[in-house]
Image 1 (tube, helix red, strand yellow):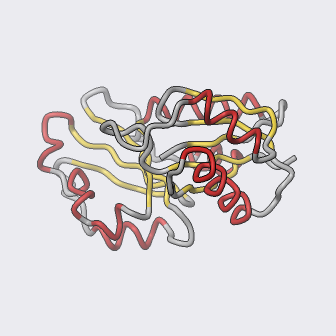
Image 2 (cartoon, rainbow, N blue to C red):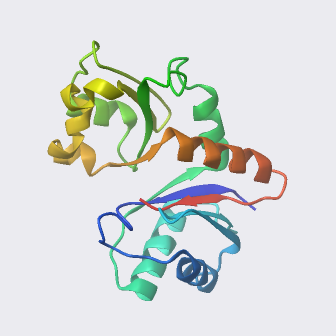
Length: 193
């Protein structure tokens, strides 16, 4: 069976779009997914699917969430293999300096990382670093200067912000490790955004 990461956008943030992980497991089981495993309350789920088409999985995930929770949540699918490849190609500065905050932005299709970066504009290199691989944008910013960075204001670039979901480096690396471990167990990964 194929293995995927599904990123659900905007759940359990600021008291909005509340989704319990045990209920989410039930919703995905009812939708026909197998071997469902959740990770922390931000909505990260491993699962198996017989569906091979990412757009079909996206539709099924969104329909399951709407049917079970009454919420219209956008989801992004990325295979566990693509996550592993992206993290393996992360720039050497990403997640290596404790003086910096490190994040990964996952771009929702049909947008590309290059398009989102162009929409958001140039970074301020004295405060932040940015690179991408595949559909993942790696961003790091000096903790003492985050408010001065261009990408800390990504929310104001609505068109770019609406086409991605963000995970901090700790969550990204945990999902990366789970994806690698579960390649043999055949569990895809679902990330709720």
